Image 1: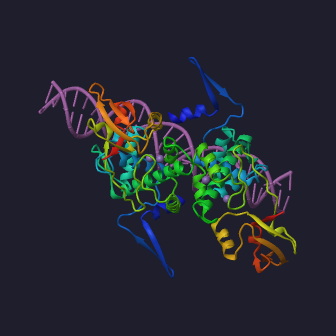
Image 2: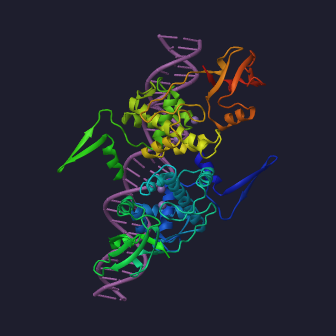
Image 3: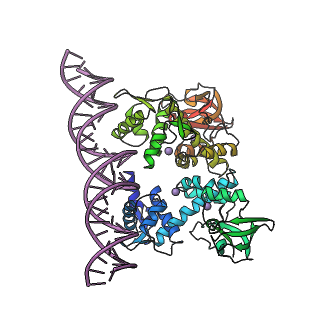
Length: 251
Length: 251
DNA sequence: ATTTATTTTTAGGCTAGCCTAAACCAGAAA
DNA sequence: TTTCTGGTTTAGGCTAGCCTAAAAATAAAT
Ligand SMILES: [Mn+2]
Ligand SMILES: [Mn+2]
Ligand SMILES: [Mn+2]
Ligand SMILES: [Mn+2]
C-alpha cells in the first residue's frame, strides 16, 4: 500500500493544487526520493570503485567490496538499471548515471558529516567513526542533514581528510600524492588516508601519524618497497609498502 | 553465512580463550545483542500498548498501531516468541518477557535521547523530532548512545515530557494527571503530552501551550466534554475533549 | 444452549535480497 | 581458428516480512 504510493511519487518532484485539480510537475531527470539501505550501499560502492564515477566497474569487484556473491550483484545491477541509476550492459561492466552519481554523493555527504559529528561532538576517535557512520548514512531526512551541516559549521573534510560533497552534490577534488610515490628527500603534510579501516588507523595512532603530520622520505628500500621517513623532523620511522600506499600527502 | 554466526552468538554473552580452548560463557536470561528494525518496532509497540508492560496486548491493536495486518502480526508474534522476547499463547494475547521489556526500554531510550538531541542541538521543534527519531532509534551502537547521553548532559525527559530510561533499563514513573480528569477550579503545570503526532503538537503551538505552561480549569461543558481553561492566568481557551485527553498536568 | 459476530490464526502467495551450482561469454592462449 | 579459462549470468531456491482469503476459536447475543 504505502510502497505503491511511494513508487508513484518517485518521478514526481512536486505538486500544486488549484481548486479541485492536482497538477503533478515532472522532471525528465527523475529523482528517486528514497532508496533502500541496500541500494544505497551498492551505489556508493560503485561510485568508489569507479574512482569517483569515471571508470566501468566489474561485478566481482562489487561482490568483494560488499562481501556478497557475484550472482547477487547481477540481480541488483538489473534492478538499479531498471531504476535508471546505473548504465549496465551484460558482461560489459557497470557505471553510474548522472542520477546514480547524485545518489552516491548524497550518501557520501551524509556519511562524512556524521563522521565529523562523531569525532568533534561525541569524542570518537578517527578509527571508531566509520562503522557507526555506515549505519547513520542511511537515515533519510534532508532537514536533519542540513541542520547537522550547519551545526558542525559546514565542514569541508571528514576525519580522514576526505572532502564532503555539498548539498547540491558537488565534491572537491583534492590535490594529493601517495606517500609511496615520493622520491627520496621529498616530503609533505599528511592530508588523507586511502583506507579508513580501524586496524590501519590504529597503526597510524601507534606510530604517531595523523592528519597534519609532516613527513619526509629519507630512503626507499628496493627489496620490499618499504620507506624510511622522518616524522615532524624528529622521529625516524620505517613504513611498509602497504602503509605508504595508504597515506596521502599534500601535492 | 553471517546470519548463522550471529544466530549462534545470540546466547553468548562473552568468551575467554585459554590456550587452545575457547570457553563460552552463557547466561540463562540470554540477551540478543541485535534485533531487526522490524522486530524492534513490534517490541516497542507491544510495550506501549501494554501500558509499560503490565497488560496483555491484542493482535489487532498491534496491527493498527503498526499499520499492518493481523496476519502479519501473528507471524511476528510466533517469531518473537521463539526468541523468548514475548509470552504468546494463541488467541490469548501477548506480553513482553523480562528480556523483551529490556529491548523495548533500550529502543525507547535511544528514541528519546535522539529527540533531545534534535531539539536542543539541531533546533528542531517538538513536532518535528518524532519522525526522525523513529529512524535513528534503530542505529545500533552502545558507544554512540552512551556518548550522546553524556553530550546532552544526561537528560531525564524528552521534548514531550516523557522519561528517558537509564542505560540499565530503568524508567521513571511520572506522577501526572490527565487534564480531562481535573475538576473545575483545579489546575497545574503541563508536564507531558499523550500524543506526539505533529498535528497535535502544532495545535498546541498555535494556542500557546507548551511544557511548563500553567493551566487552570474554569468550566466543563457537559454537552461535548470540552473544557474552558485559563492559560498562564491570562488567556482564556476552549479545549476539545480530544485535546484535553492528551495533555498531562503535574499531580 | 444456540446462534451470531468478532477476533485470531492458517493457508497460500508475493517481493527484496541473498545463496549455490550450472551454464554462458569473451578475451587470451595455443 | 579453435581451445581454454576466468568472469558473469541464469536457474532454482532460501528467509524475512508483508499481503488476501478462508478457516477456526472465542466472545456476545439471543
Ligand atoms: Mn552503509
Ligand atoms: Mn571517512
Ligand atoms: Mn522505529
Ligand atoms: Mn517523545
